[in-house]
Each structure stands twice: as structure tokens, then as C-alpha cells.
Amino acid sequence: MTRIDVPATRDRPPDHADADAVLPPSGGRWRLPRLTGYDGRVLAQDALLAGLVVLAETLLAASGSAEPTGGGWPITITWSLVCALPIALSRLLPQVAVVLALTTAAGAVLDRHEPLTAIVAFVLLTYTTAARFPLRRAVLLTTLLWTPILAAALTLPVPVGSIGITRAYMIFTNALIALVCFFVGRTVHARRATIRALEERARVAEENQRSMADQAVADERRRIARELHDMVAHHVSVMSVLATGARRVLTRDPVAADEALGSIAETSRTTLRELRRLLDVLRTDAEPAADLTPQPGLAGLDALVDQVREAGLPVSLRVEGTPAPLEPSLALTVFRIVQEALTNALKHAGTATAQVRLTFGVYWLVVEVLDTGRGPSLDPNRAGHGLVGMRERVALYGGTLRTGPRPGGGFRVYAKVPLEATGVPSGEETA
Image (tube, rainbow, N blue to C red):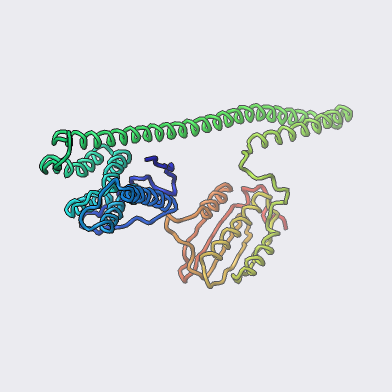
């Protein structure tokens, strides 16, 4: 018989897993495996084989090669169909098929029938169990299959009228058939194991090769980045020296100062080109293309509040104190803190309201986002990266961040950033 094997994938467990699924756990119940597309094809193929064996036995009986025993042809064909059931289940449920083969064969023998399908079932199950299961289980199932046959050949009388057939011949023939089927199955089992090992080795080698290639690309990028960093540092140093010289000779020698300023302009353009190359080297292929849209700042808070309000969360914005001109990076940090806090409120607060409050002091800028909802989960195993990102942004400017439930209910995000760290005068100093 030719078996059609399909490699195991992540969507279908290995063949022996399906067989083990029918074994009841200790004190449990018998469970039938859930049929997949592959299982349906296997069942259809084995059922077709069983039907062909029954058809062959019917044709042999019709041609006169076999004589019907007690009960006539209907009983003979019935036993042939019953004994063909283990053939149909040989690959889908091999262990159940072994039990069925022993039961149906015993019933047929007691009824004085020896259907061809029972012999084919024993041969096929011996091969299937040897090819599919580990050695210990394969030996156990093969022994379970053939022990009754060998015991019958050893104890039952030799059929009358048989020429040249002795008891030793019957035992030897049955044992030889069992051993041949078993060792053919073990050979197929070893070949499959070798193929799986080679496939796994090829997969690991491919992953290692890909990892080594990625590592080589990363090393080359770091080397180029170091070289470009040295070039950029050199150009910046040159611009600093030229600017210092130009300031010293600006009143005494305007021509030399103009030449120095021209050199500074040319060097700055070269530096910008080198910086662009440095960013191109450091940018990975997975990163999206550069966004030319200006980064949002304090001016974008009104649009952000309106957007969240349209999404279903009532939000109000209040600014206290005299707003001070902020560095673009600090303004972006404030915007991202408010954006992340309102996003969390929109996702976790439920039916609630929120308030955004900016307080400009002499030395500090305070950002508060308050809501009346239940707040995000504080489980560290389920927490996202939003709060961590806000904390890192605030820490970059030497500020502090506090997040947590409010005493009266709701959630509060409080960020305090020193204005002196930004190098920008506060509101009162500007006034």
C-alpha cells in the first residue's frame, strides 16, 4: 500500500498527536479528535482502500476462487465489510483500529469466516503503527496484534486436506509477515525522522545566516556612522574656530571677516549633507519614510482637544499664567503628554469628562490632565508603554511625572517641568 504523507504544519499537529487524542486520561473519558481538512482527506483515502479490498474479495468470491462458509454470500460480504472498518481508521485512529481489528477478526473466526479484509487490516496496521509511533509503543501494538494469531496457529488443529502445510509452517509464515511489515514501517519511521531533522537543521541554518547578515549590516552601519560622526564633529569645530576669528577681525578687517563667514556658510552646508547621510545610515529599512509635516506644539492643543471631544469625551482646556515661548522639543513633549493622557482617558475612562490644565509659573511648567472615569489598568503585566514614554519625556528635561487615581474618583496625570532647563525665560521675566 502507498501512503500519502503531508508534512506537519502549525495548523495541523503531527500524526501521532491525533492518535494520542483518543486515549482517555487517567479517570477521564474517551474523546474523538476534531476532524480537520487533512484528517478528512486521510479518512477518505483509507475508506477508498477498504472499499477496494472488499470489492476484490467480492470479485474473488464471484469468480469461484473462494467458497462461502456458513450463512452464504450475504454473511461473508457482511463480515468483509465489518473487518474493513479498521482499514478505514488505520491512519486516523490507529490505536482504535487495532482494537477493532482484534475484535472483528475474533468474531469472524468464531463464526467460521476468514475474510480477506481482516488479513489486509492486520498487515496494514502493523506497518502503520511501526511507521508512526515510537519503538516501544510500536512493539507493544504489534505484539498485541499478532499474539492471538500466533497463539491460534500454535494451538488450533491444522486444516484437514491441506498439503504440505504444517503447524511450524503456519507459525513461521505469520511471524515472517509480521516482522517484514514491522521493519518496513520502522524504516519509514527512521526516514521521516531524518527528513524532519534535516528540515529543522536547514531552518536553523537559514535563520543563523539571516541573523549574521543582519549583524553584518548593522556593524557596517555603525562603522559608517562613526566615520560620519567624526566628519561632522570636525566641521562643527572648524565653524566654531572661524566664527571666533570672524568676531575678532570684524571691525579691523571686514574682508577677512566676510571670507570667514563665507567659509562658515560652506562648512555648514557640508555639515548638513553629512548629517543627512548619517541619518540615512542609521535609519533601518523597517522605519517609515520621513514625515515632512511640522511637529505639533502648544498651538496644536486646541485641535487635539476638539478631536477628542468629537470622539465622544467632553474635554476642556485651561491655561493659567503667562505662556512663555518654549523650545520646539519641550512644546512637542507637552503635546505628547496631553495626547497620551487623553487617549488613555478615551479608552479606559468610559462615560466621563476630562480637563487639560497648563500652568506657567516663574520656574516651572505644570501639565495636568484630569478625568472622572475609572482610569487605565495599573497591572504591571498588562500596562502599556504610554505612561513609560511620558515618564521618559519628562525625565529628559529634569521634570517629574505623577500618575494615578484621584481621591474623589477618576485618574490624574501630573507633569512638572522646570522652565530654566529649557534655556527660555519664564513668562514673568519676558514681561
